[in-house]
Image 1: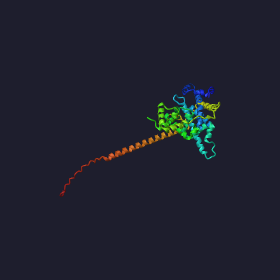
Image 2: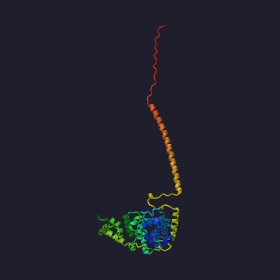
Image 3: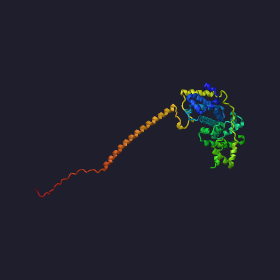
Length: 194
Length: 173
């Protein structure tokens, strides 16, 4: 990363629009990619942390996502949806990690005692037990429901952005979110959720 | 047309997040007025709070991303040197838009297989052509013989047999 850019706060980078970054890429590809990294890295780290519940894994995922972005030749093309692509790749890598972890866990299931409960794992990355309970409940849901709840209510993506990330219609986003919230109400007692 | 319970159920998140169009919001509100079941479900969902928990690890702490910055610098140098090229393998879009990249060994194996297959096909085609020619010759010969067999043979000219006049020998000479 260039020395001058190290001084640039992520908030400054976040003000750059995707179109401005694409225009910058035509003049200075390296600087444009550095700005993309600055703009998205913290949000992607938080998103990855929600799914993996492990700060080191989340850090590694974000690094891998940006390496893939650098190799992606279409990344600065006019029609390319950078934000949606970054969140999609992050989600996929994280869910792959979680699935691998579950498979390894299944193999090691015979070796007691269990190291940590799900709530403990959440607490390791997040502060505040009550808030972590909602995330722990979300963690018990299907991948589809978990991902859409995280994207909407924790990553603060709009319905249109979620549709781009998941590559589904806007109506599907709305109905899937509605089903996910009803499912969450079943999983989590209303008192704990509020 | 009034909204059904299923349609209302699919729009509850949209209602709570303010993502319904004005027309849909009006239909939804009318449905709630006459449907106690959907109203109860909505009240349940309204109670949900998604306050983001504070991370124990703060990515904004200076130095947190230094390792990644170094890794990206190395990757950039590799890209500039041409060591790594092309889109990432995963999630690069639909298959028909992806660039096919093969390792050299796989490409060589494919080329050898192609040459072998093409050679075998050519040899088979030539053998078939040869067999076809032989078959055509046999058929022609058979045809000729059949035609010959079917044609009535002209009978050889019969020489008129000379009648010998037998004169009865009568008496002595």
